[in-house]
Length: 206
Ligand SMILES: [Zn+2]
Figure 1 (cartoon, rainbow, N blue to C red):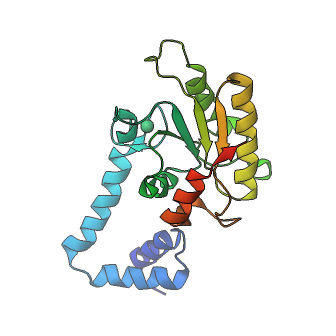
Figure 2: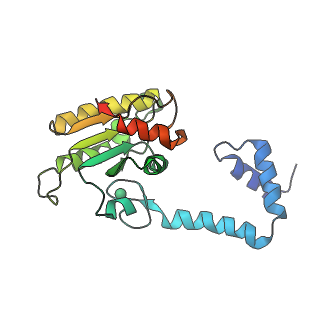
Figure 3: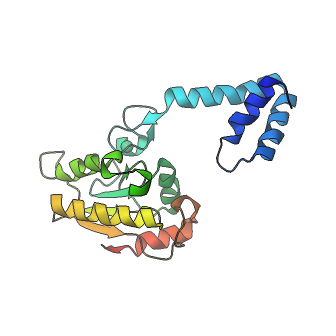
């Protein structure tokens, strides 16, 4: 229906989450009518983010250097690690202001049906961080693992798996889960900060 380059743009935009065919068309026409520098600024921003942003080699959060800003921050407590599914989950927890430890981003949740097994997530790396306790790693060992995976079936299964694995590796480390109050079946990134703050404060042992 449209010229090939326009179709290509619509196809690419429609790949974005929450963008249907009609919205993709509307965005494409907006980009077509926008000033050239504005449209190219968007293209440049996408290129830059892909070229410069990678994953922290410690916690797998987004990072523009080898490690992320949170891992580099000496004031963050090393005794607590909050385990989340995606880098986007770090943001609402940070906004709640209730957590002052470090993070560990799994890169997803266990889902055997979709072929996501423990080795597909950064679970081994988490266990290595926990296992480094007392091995002269700066002296500050991990004492608590706060599991903040989503309140979905896969998120809950992941929480239980990690709790077991951590207990097997370091029985002295307390494993906690966010208190209920988060809507069941929902993703962490959609929780408001007050609810999330409360869930963090009321976390319980798993
Ligand atoms: Zn990090």
